[in-house]
Image (tube, rainbow, N blue to C red; front, side, top):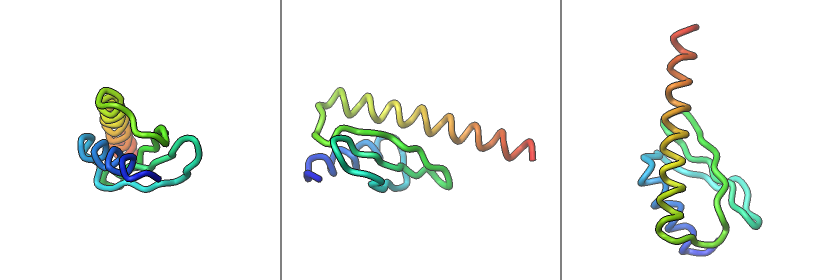
Length: 80
């Protein structure tokens, strides 16, 4: 994986507020698990660095997914 792609993934994780990230699979695309507390959001990213707007879009999508996963987890815990 190129250093620029690693920097981009770190920036996306930082902007989205992820605790950590882990590379699951690397091919033409990268499959990344971003961890938020005890929840994980899986995202597919390009294996080549994207521009600033692409990174912002990926971070915004990740934030929305993390909020949804956290809300779903809280609802699930309340019903048990």
